[in-house]
Length: 400
Ligand SMILES: *[C@@H]1O[C@H](CO)[C@@H](O)[C@H](O)[C@H]1NC(C)=O
Ligand SMILES: *[C@@H]1O[C@H](CO)[C@@H](O)[C@H](O)[C@H]1NC(C)=O
Ligand SMILES: *[C@@H]1O[C@H](CO)[C@@H](O)[C@H](O)[C@H]1NC(C)=O
Ligand SMILES: *[C@@H]1O[C@H](CO)[C@@H](O)[C@H](O)[C@H]1NC(C)=O
Image (cartoon, rainbow, N blue to C red; front, side, top):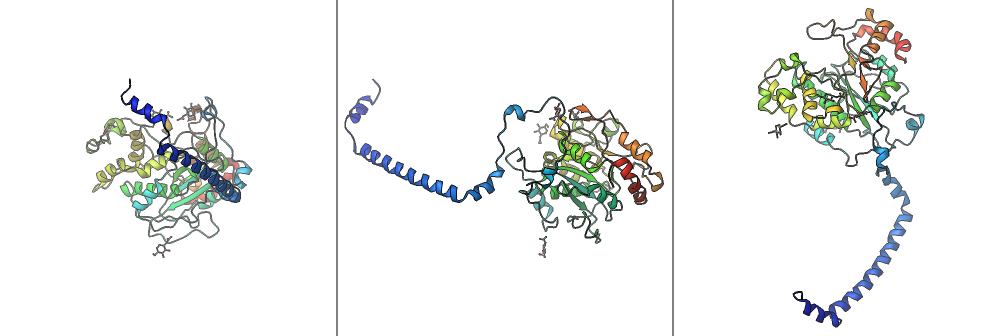
């Protein structure tokens, strides 16, 4: 016999006060349920607009099979006319790029990410073009031609020296795109700080999906639709990241004290192209960047720009999520004082641009397969290269 069983049996025989009260409560509860159901139905029908307005944030249902990536590399998507003119506007981008936030406030705000991983299909991904410059953009007219007719698929951010007070003309796509800036110095932590500031400002626009860094001496060597399809269709970031004797010789024991081992130490060109996930990690990084910043204190040249980002990627341990190469060509065969060769106006020919586009072609992997494109962009071009570049662009770059 179960303990207490006798008492329970006795109690079950006669209806108690409690059970009678319970019966009444059930009746009241079902009444309330009916009433509230009616209320909900009323709200739903009268406020259909309200619900329709907020539901686009719900992720579309997908079967696991459809979500799994196909083994063969998908062709890069081409933005359709529908996507350009369609209802992409549920994400209202910040109207300007000026704000009064401190870097601390900015990084905190920029590091926020949606809980829902998959973006709604109605969100058209944008490419953020981040320009780290002294002031003027001498090759701006070439970029203007590149962007022409592709509004809504890109956004521009410019970090200039804080003393720069000039502005592009009001009808330029660069107009009003200069972000609050701080002083920078080559080879100094402030340079990487400026890159992170550019990333953080671009992250504030939830439409930005890919982030590419340029200097005033960079140019595109393909047309916008090719660049856009390549970047938004890629399943990796493109951060130059390698190790060799040269990179290892730059390692300092200081980093071991900050838990950055030689095995994790990497080198790579500064000119990155990355996805949103890596951009978020970069602005949220409170481990790797402080180590570099502290190391650089009092050193005239700590080469942080060539080691910070590749080392961060290596520390994240993302393996195949980074292609380990840059998309920005530079002529290192004719390097001067550890800087790549600068192409002057007299050097710019159709042949040069073809050579850059074909450089390394066939060796470069894209989404796990060989793809003819190694470089989407190139550096360094001097201001006097503008006119010849504008002349050859329609013939070899496909725009202008
Ligand atoms: C920044 O602060 C100044 C002074 O308080 C104000 O006039 C300005 O409108 C602010 N700018 C922005 C973009 O909020
Ligand atoms: C140092 O790195 C190792 C391996 O990456 C990790 O397991 C450990 O927790 C780290 N320690 C600190 C103090 O960050
Ligand atoms: C990039 O290099 C890492 C090792 O540092 C490797 O695990 C990864 O597979 C490489 N990425 C690609 C796309 O090959
Ligand atoms: C990228 O796509 C290719 C082809 O579908 C696949 O083999 C590879 O594993 C993918 N890489 C990542 C990091 O998802």
